Image 1 (spheres, rainbow, N blue to C red):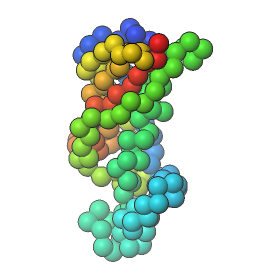
Image 2 (image 1 turned 135 degrees about the vertical axis):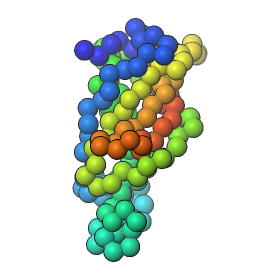
Image 3 (image 1 turned 120 degrees about the vertical axis):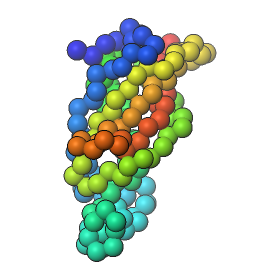
Length: 148
């Protein structure tokens, strides 16, 4: 069972998110939403011939944008009384490409929390794991603001 956001202790690791499959349809939708149609993301035939990965890869920011959805499953929030906003990402680094049909998940631990005028700012050290690979897709500090 997920813990309440206010119950998480500094340094505590959240339960990992569920695995999310990154298929070509999701990559194409992200390309359409952002206007980034670089061939390495959307042209499987060219990738098979020319890419060092031999397949399409997801946009780095596609993986990052899936964090909020996963976060809401990793912590318990009372939607009637609690509102959480994305506050940003510090020091994001993309370490390993996510290939089409890879599965990713988020592993986070609470690095800090700080009272601000709008509420409490939570900073989570997070890595995006790729199923079956040792190197994470990305690492960074994901910032979430609990209003109130």
